Figure (cartoon, one colour):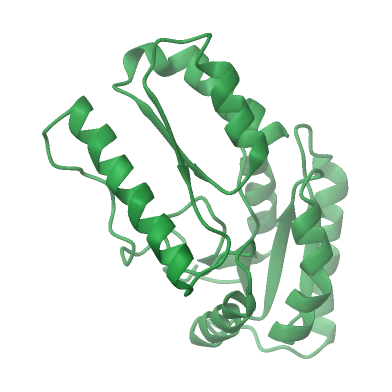
Length: 227
């Protein structure tokens, strides 16, 4: 998995300057990457196993136990209070852009290569006013939960609040889970979706053409542009 590989490479390259590294995951790929990384670096590593099921007594006990392990790990590194952002802190994309079609951004992660893709969205007239990717500390359900119906309800509610004209899905080539859930995403939100498969070397020219065509589709469908 490119996400696991990228995380491991970042820790190996920059970790000497860190007090430690923490990864929260349900993914075996990240767990195996952490195990292999322990032999290559002296950086203290912590893998927090997040239960895929929520609301059951067993899941709550597991989550509580993992939080206790994390607290002990952080306590060994430093006694200074954490400066991490609050879950309800607004993201940079929460303020509406000055003009353009209002879209939400969804995906499992946003890589460095994806930043160029985000830039071409603005050029095409698509303004991201709701960032629902997993890169930000937003308190929302995740697609990997079982059941994950809460995620679709969350997307519908937040989409209405943000007065979205459509959604943009940044899909990594290796993410079979999101690929499988695409029909449900489109059905639940009842809004147009632009699906952009990016990867390590996104074809920017082709993606820009698709973004421009999506903006034209919004115009032809009679969707109102919000000022």
